[in-house]
Image 1 (cartoon, one colour):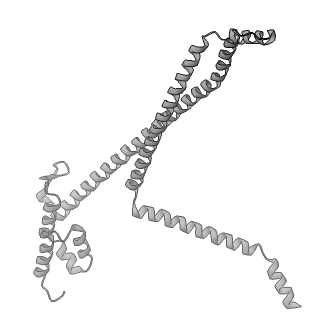
Image 2 (cartoon, one colour; image 1 turned 120 degrees about the vertical axis):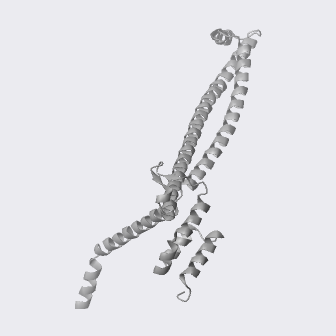
Length: 256
C-alpha cells in the first residue's frame, strides 16, 4: 500500500465508485482503515460521484433554500441528503406500521361482530329447537281431539290446544324455516370467521416482520437470558446457604 502514490489510490477509489462496486458504506469502512485512506476518502470528487449516483435529483439548495449547495462540501451534502432520506424512510415505515395496526384492529372488530352474530343465531336456534317439540305435542293433541279419548286426557288435550294462540301448523312451519335460516347463517358466519381469522393472522405476521429489528431483538433476548442466568445463580446460592446441616455432619464425623 505504501508503494502506491495517492493519485493511484484516488483513481482506484474513483473507479470503484463509478462502477458502483463501492458504496458510501464501503468508502466509510476504507476511511477508518488508516490515516492515509481516511484523507483520500474525504476527496470531494469521490463524494460528488456518490451524491450524483445515490441522489440523482439533488436539489440546488439545502435547508429550505437557506444554504446554497456550492457552500457545502459534497460529503456534507451527501450526509444531509442521507439523513433526510433516512428520516423519510423511517416516517414511511411508521405510517405502514400504523396502517397495519389499524387493519388488525379492524379485523378484531369484525371477528367480534361475527362472534356476536353467531351467538345470536345460536340462541335463536336453541329457542326454536326447544319450542318445536312442544308445538308438535300440541298438534298431536289437536288431532287426537277428533278421536274418542277418556275425559281426563281429553280435558288435558283441550287445555294444551287452548294455550296455543297462533295456529299450530303455521307456527311449526315458521320455526322450521327459522331453523333452516339459522343453520345457513351459522354456516356462513363460521366461514366468514375463519376467513377473517386467517386475514388477522396474516396481518399479525406481517406486523411482526415489519417491526423486526435485529439489534433490538438480540438485545432483548440476550437480556432475558442474562436475567434467567442470574436468577438461576441466586437460587443455587440460596439452596447452598439453606443446607448447613450437611457441613455440620461432616465436621462431626471428622472430629470423631
